[in-house]
Image (cartoon, rainbow, N blue to C red):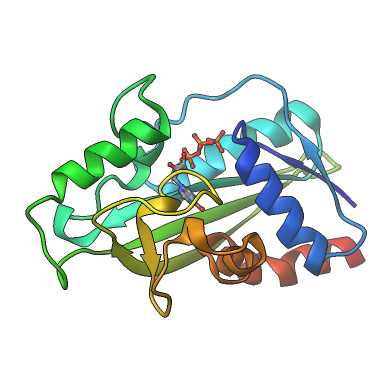
Length: 201
Ligand code: ITT
């Protein structure tokens, strides 16, 4: 079975391939290089479906898309869906980390709690031209924001996120450990039965 993955984030592609390869033998993940839709939804689910629907309708193939981010409790869930561009366009992951650490500089534990969120949207086009089949899988990964960055693995906010049950940042975890525990892995666990059902149909 071939699925198109609607993302321009190379780190997500790597994590998808790693997690999918372990659980769904015979699935090939194809990159999507068609037109990029405007991500103007108001939730992770909205944005994941905007990306997956665009890839499914452009390619006619089964499409997956991930919309993810970090939510800090004391900030009312921000940066949330704005995680990728929290510090503004062009500031990149480094700028985002710096801004978040600065915004939390007066906040002490136990008030630095946060979680990663991941919604994976699955869109299966209907061969007869009817409405596509759609499914959303969600995973969260609770933890806290460290006071300084540590580690070089992973991407995005990993260097400042210490997952519950660990005393190191997500960027200090081996990729296999992150990919067994993360919000993305947890969303995958919810998606897996659907993928297996579709692959067997
Ligand atoms: P696509 O929309 O092309 O998939 P994107 O990176 O813009 O790529 P999102 O809009 O879903 O994707 O934003 C996700 C951001 O949330 C990402 O850029 C990171 O800053 C953060 N993020 C998501 N998952 C993460 C993870 O596993 N580790 C660290 N940061 C993560």
